[in-house]
Length: 239
Image 1: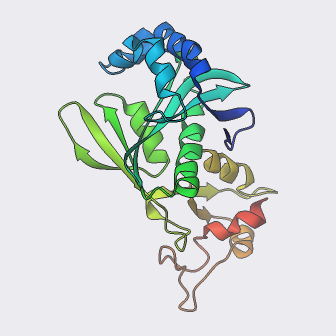
Image 2 (image 1 turned 30 degrees about the horizontal axis):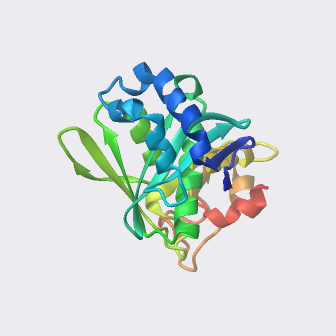
């Protein structure tokens, strides 16, 4: 099984028992990086044979390798704790960090869970001090629902298909006057898991092009004066 992400060359590949050695070797070679906050100690110490069992078709988790140019650079998994509610986790090798790979991988995994598994809720835990991991979740619409002694729990509910501007997963874009206003900014936002967009421009010509107003004279998504805010349906005009 292969899940495509929004970034060319970055995929999620279903792990099989034959991947166990490569997977555990990548964990061990990144031990200092992964365990610096006290977590992933058990994962690094887990024998390869146990991973082989976990990656079997009837294993306890749905595990994927995060691949860049077909090379394994990390892992992510869905845990059916109480279907249709799932837990998830993800990690990257040290030299794969800082390029947005976790963002696109998490977005693709969440879409797969909601669309293919029928998941209603996704949960993830982040060890205190791991601000970068928390930021990945928040950029993908997850919100804090509980705080424990060692970690914070995040939650993402299945998106309401009737609400294309979900306040928990939207971005604001401020657009200057350019020949193709907002085009690249919008595409970058999509790679960060954004599901809705509020766009504002100080340029009159751009505002007129993107005007989406309610009969009352206010934009329905945020009740700003007409012409100052636009909805996700503008994607077709931006591509």
